[in-house]
Image 1 (cartoon, one colour):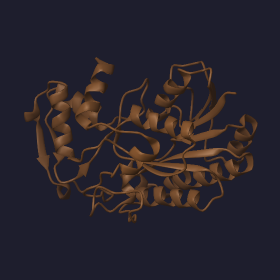
Image 2: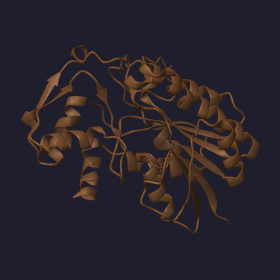
Image 3: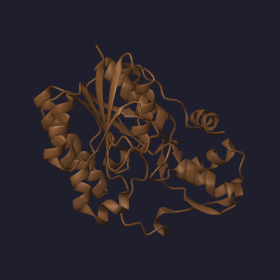
Amino acid sequence: MKVKILITGSNGLLGQNLLELFLKDPENYKVVGFSRGENRSGRTDFEYHAIDLTNQQLLEEKIKQIQPNFIINTAAMTNVDACENDKEGCYDLNVHVVEYLAAVCSEINAHLIHISTDFIYDGVKGNYTEEDIPNPLSYYGETKLLSEKRLQDSNINYTILRTILVYGLVKDMSRNNIVLWVKESLENKKEITIVDDQYRAPTYVEDLALACKVSIDKKATGIFNISSNQLLSIYEIAQEIADAFGLDKNLIKPISTSTLNQTASRPAKTGFDLTKTNKELEFYPNSFKEDLQRFKQKII
C-alpha cells in the first residue's frame, strides 16, 4: 500500500526537492503539495492545492479529505529580520500553523515531520547536541522553539529535524541562498563583504530532503540534527564556494557582525553534533566542500 505524504510549502526549496525525491518512486509514495499561489515546481504528476496555511478551518478540511499518513511541514517565515518586523505574521506561520497541523494529525493519526533551526540556540557553545538547552536570540528563533514545544506537548508521532543554512537550486525559486548569492556575485565580478565571526555548518537541501525520507521510512520519532559535518565561518564558507566554482576569492572581504546593524541578533557559533543522527537514522552527512561538488555537478 502506498504511503501518502503531504508536503506543506511544496513551492519552496525543500518542498520542491521533496517532490523530486518522492515522485521518483510512485509505486510506494503518493504525494500531495500545499503552497501559496500556483504550483511553481514545473511538475504535474502530483496533487496540488493552493492554500493559505494560516486558514485553520480550510487547512483542517483539506487534510481530513486527503488523509495523509505523513505531513512534512516545510512552510515557515525564515527571514530573520522580517520576523522581528512582522511578529504577528511570523507567529501565525511558525507557531499557529504547527498547532493546526498537530491538532489534525491527532485526529487522523498522521505523523508530522517538522523542520526547525540552529537559531533556537544563543551560539555561545556551538556543536550542539539535540539535548542542549535552547536560548534563542531572535523572534524567529523564539517561534521555532515554540513550535517544537507544541509538538513535544502533543500526543502525536512527530519528528523534528533541526538544520542550518540550507542551500540548493530548484525551478522558479522565490528567494536566494548563500551559495547562489556568492556564486552569482563573484561571477559578476562584484565585491562582497562577509562576516568572519559567525560560524555555521551549511546544509545541502538534497540531504535535508533525504533525511525527511529516512525519517518516514524508519518511522523515526524525536529530534535530530541535520547539517554538514564541519563548522566554518561564513567568510570561510564564501571562500569554499569561490574555490568550488573557480571564482576570484579576492572579491570577498571579511567584516565583523557588529558593523552590519542587523535588526535581529544572530548566534555567533552554531554547528551540530551529528552522533544521534548517525546512529539512529544511519545518516552520515558530508563536509560542505564535498556537498558543493555534488551541487556543482547538478547545475553545470
